[in-house]
Image (tube, rainbow over all chains, first blue to last red):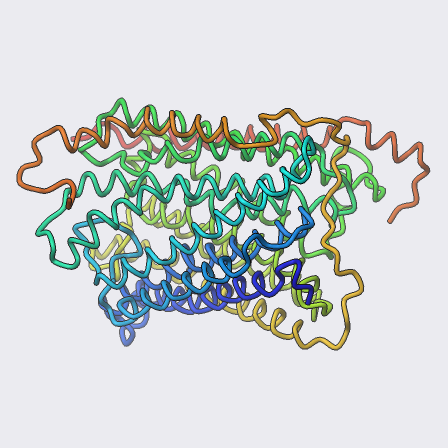
Length: 540
Length: 50
């Protein structure tokens, strides 16, 4: 194991993430089975909501944060060719995050934090849940500092040179995460922790929800960034081609940084404490953030087209069949794009101000974010693991065939799980329910989709077990990996000189701050300016 | 891997990604059609709130 590449730190982080992932999948299967009403023996609202909360925390906060950190450390060291900046601090951040997870796990597993992994009062969790979450976020901020410092040190040592695209995307994600996590951090520190400790009697729910919305959408892009970075910088090489455009990647990363944070009000369309004009402004931004995804889709597919044609593919679509589908990275990206297209369509419905009323608080929303996150994001996490494990462990991947089967099973399982889930929402089933004590004809109509979801959940569990098996067995594989270098994709046109704006983040960070003040300044200030009918907006 | 001459390889690298254009057009059309179906076929069908 080459320690200069931070393989130990990256492996430790990713293993924490994947262990959390496996536990979360087990809980997920229980949840679809419990909610369906097919198995009365396992029905328990208390257990269900504790399970949902734990499942959400493990998937959305633990898997993602640790995967982002692990991938980031490995990307930074390999793309820049330098050691981790202040390695003891990096390990401290890792252990602080682990301590945060363990602290939050106690109330979660004992049913004292069944708040659906959200930070929405009046749902109130045990203080340990909020303190644990805070430690996890602070640990992730240390990672952000590490990434920013590593890029700064590299730029000082390489004046005038272009920051490698993988690192550019990683730092864009780090800066975005610092900015977006400030919303929920403020809510937790100044509202939820004092409230849960009994230091204050009540909190302003409107302010809390507004602050959480600050974090709530951009966090999705925090999860998605590694997937996009892998698509831009690893996939074209794995497919045997070139990256169609390095600059397009930078534009996409910059747009994600600028547009993903100040748009959170599409989570508040039905909430009464923000005016329609602000919601419209945020809706416009929400549609803008689709642009970097379209840029990414175009650039990556064009890169794959180059690879397919170099491999002998002819005709308008003949290059698709010529791609090396036996490579897990290629297969995962192809399946990930299919799920992104379907999930993106659902996202457009959610973001449409009027139409949102049709799907608001229904199972459509849960189906949507499972398709985007469980589909596109997580399948690319698998691809990253399969791609990096041989480099990090020095052992060949245990079974390429099993890895491919695992990816296909995950794709099938996600579709079998989430398409009926969307339909349930259109058929009127509310989300955040543990059972369906509704009109008998409605429940009868829902039943086939509920059963399909159980099948989907079981397929996903089998796939998750296969992933862990492949990764564990790779550590013990007797066959040594011959190529330990992580090879990044070459752009189609070599870069002679990158404009300063596309080689740094000073201007873009300032722009996000201005945009944030414009879109969140008054909506937050109003809680301090208007009569709050006895609630305290802030605890200090 | 297909064996290409340097000229053939250069030609591929310099050509426009027509397949990608076609795919993106197809996906965009499907997205627009899907959105229109949801808006006109499902959302407006609900009628006004009573």
